[in-house]
Length: 163
Image 1: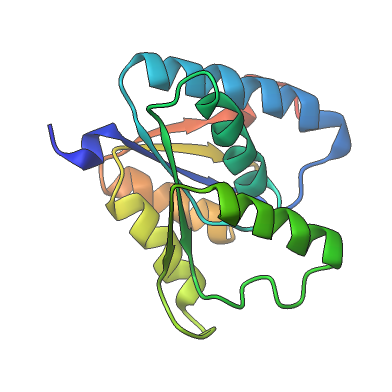
Image 2: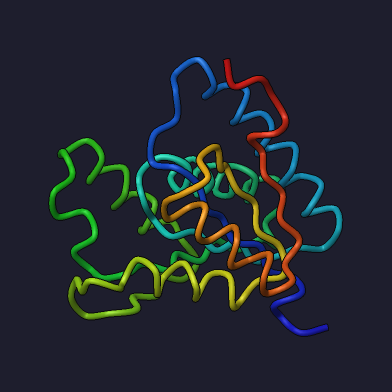
């Protein structure tokens, strides 16, 4: 089995409504526990705010009980957090310091570096765990790309009421 068959990537919105955060966290943890049981070892996250951060934290938390799993951050460029507030930068740097591998796809921010990051995550995975509630935007593009590439897509937004 090639490494891609044991790899899951994440895509999701940057904003998660406060009233959904707990349910989304629980759905994500439940999904990842099942994937770990199925032998998925590698988890690729794009390092963005919102769902990417939640996914990375969840992998790091589950790694404590399943030390065989790995968090791989695939980042568009080293300056991704340049305009973030100080608290979000601190969280981002903490995740980076605990990741098993960090990959930068471009030395500088470029117009297409976010799409490149998303495609890289999909191209190196067999499963995509998503939080997608909008029919357009970067997350919707990535979900569509994952489906086009034949990945199993698990959209957690369908697991609970969005109201």
